[in-house]
Image 1 (tube, rainbow, N blue to C red):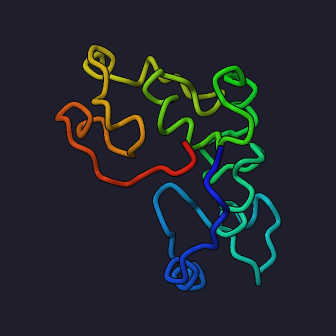
Image 2: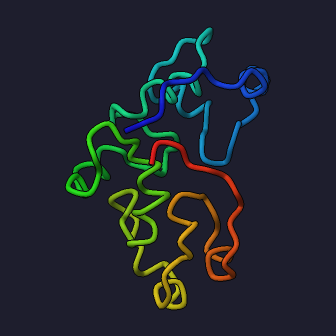
Image 3: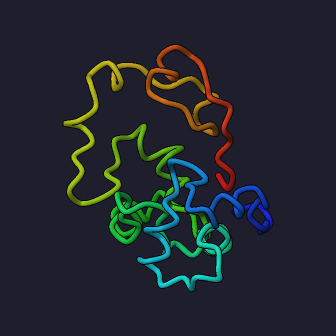
Length: 142
């Protein structure tokens, strides 16, 4: 289950109003267009409030409908599919979209050893996983 719903951080909302991206993992301009979010509403706040519905994607390269349909048996109800992909799906070579061939893209070295235990709940790069480091960015709702 997801943690209790929180409002977006005020600093993120200020940056969003300037057109800044709060993270490389969220594209507010695309999200606003894709889901018809009004100009006076926050795309980030909308995503945070509705991510557990399994109907909203934070990025155009993540096809939430495809991902949920393809891996429904591994995603608990109410869980954010994108957080699932970051924590579990990418390590298992799950495709985030129908056009993405994860096994063909991932170098053999990535597949030859499992990520460190802390990477199941933290967001880190493949290089960080290989070196046993984590960026310390916690993916909530896992």
